Length: 251
Picture 1 (cartoon, helix red, strand yellow):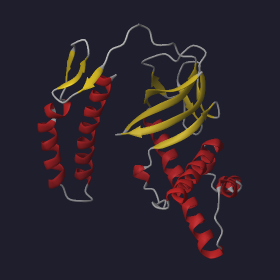
Picture 2 (cartoon, helix red, strand yellow; picture 1 turned 60 degrees about the vertical axis):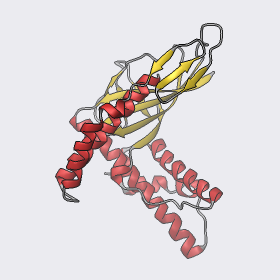
Picture 3 (cartoon, rainbow, N blue to C red; picture 1 turned 180 degrees about the vertical axis):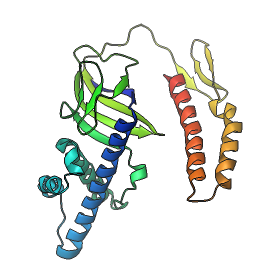
């Protein structure tokens, strides 16, 4: 059995998008509150809090915040605490890079257990606790037969929503026989030992003119303005398109 990731595009409606944004916003607030709690506990009492200490208080926090944390899956909130605990563990291991507060605009992912907080319905829509209705998913490829779904990550990228499943299944072995040597190059993408040359796609060079125009438009905008946010989003969308083109080409 092997574990692989399967990523699918989600197409939520307006109310579902608002619900998904609310999940990330509340998860970010919980993350920052737990960071603050750890700092204050060590500063005032010299105590280093761990996941178990904060997880024990999670039920009380949900009960006190009926319109906030109580709307979402309890296990997904636990994943936020585990994520923070891993961050602090990595900090103590390397001795630098103290965990910082997160900005809600840059908090883009939430982890769920499939069947507990997030489920795949019979009509193949994605159900999320606290989000109305089922979210339409673009199943561009089927899951392997007999696959076991362990976790799912809801992620927001350039204003678009995706779900990434962690799939455990018995995947087929690579077919074919024989060997070939591959050399990566600059003029060509690859050159094989049997003489085949694959040209480099040069996506960045073709998009360079448009990206320069978007960059100049961003520089002309006033900081903090709405036009600057739109120009920044257009620049990020151009970079994301180039990344997708490279990924598709390599695939």
